[in-house]
Length: 114
Image (cartoon, rainbow, N blue to C red; front, side, top):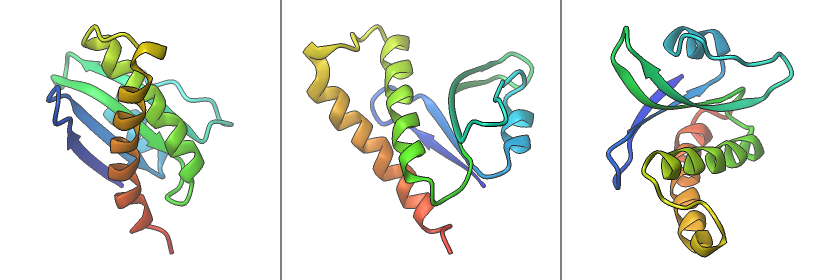
């Protein structure tokens, strides 16, 4: 499953892939994921398809813990892209922004859980 989100603050595209890793790899050429990973967050800059933004892959829809973990990476990447410090002086902003993505992603993931 693939979902596209637009960051309401920075207008970045964020793609959530749940399940089949091959679909995520096809969408984001060069994405490296070892067999023991259950999630991945990566910046996308595909000159061929002109897709720029971020990709988050979660192995299965019930994997809430990995999704929360990858959301922190997502927030870190977005902040760095926009030159916003990712440190203790911004910890409250980081927490709120991570929670925003957790809620968005879990809303999609929870509908897929049997």
